[in-house]
Image 1 (spheres, one colour):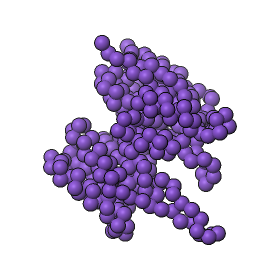
Image 2 (cartoon, one colour):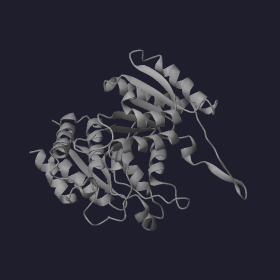
Image 3 (tube, rainbow, N blue to C red):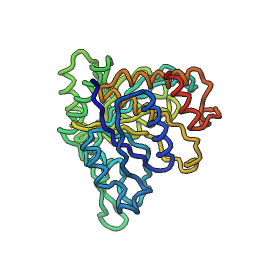
Image 4 (cartoon, rainbow, N blue to C red):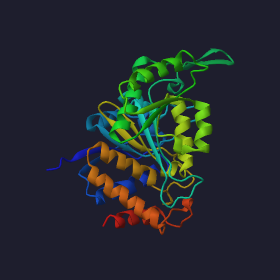
Length: 335
């Protein structure tokens, strides 16, 4: 008998509630043995709780071991720490996993893109450790540790083995940051020696960006520090149609949060126009992580079928379908 798993469902801000609701309906139609527990996070609930990440939300994800989250808003230059960063830190979700794959029927400059960005999630400049030295002078600390570097490289190689990948590329700037990025590279080399069946290489981050837009097919799994990963993962998303069609996950030793990596799109929030594909494909990753591959393939195949046929597309992809129409099309493709 299949065990039902409880999943913490977080609506988020803007179009978050709409894409979460659409994804929930599709998951229920797939007959996946899931039970949903709603919790709050994001800018829109900060006044209610005094924080954008209530303790009960963190505790729910910790208790259930799994969360599915809509996008949350983050202030630029002001306001509280990102709810995303808060979740990652408090649950030690050290690995950001972003598969980037060409979507059938979504025309871009590239074909047959199939990349995976593995991003260290807990330290580096992105951790936001900074202070004012004197008025007009700010210092940000880039902290790289052997522990974090080793475990993210281990994660990348283990992922490559499990998913039949051939190569792992370490992305760095060790030619300039010889100590911090040098430590990351040293950890990568040590881990790589334990996986002789996987090709390993090292690439400087600026060269990587140039090569990605010239020939993305030369890369497979890429592992990198936090800030590089934030930038490169969005660049890779642009190769296949944008953040609206790319899934994401933040994974730790005992729990994981699967999320839409796009913004909150306040300009269309509440209008029923949002495309739920990013969160929907994140839920496919979640089903695989929960060891429900049959249900994962059912949802994934339905998404690919709808995109391949091209009859039902949301507005930003050149169609006329609203969120509900797109959702019903996916559910119909599972029948």
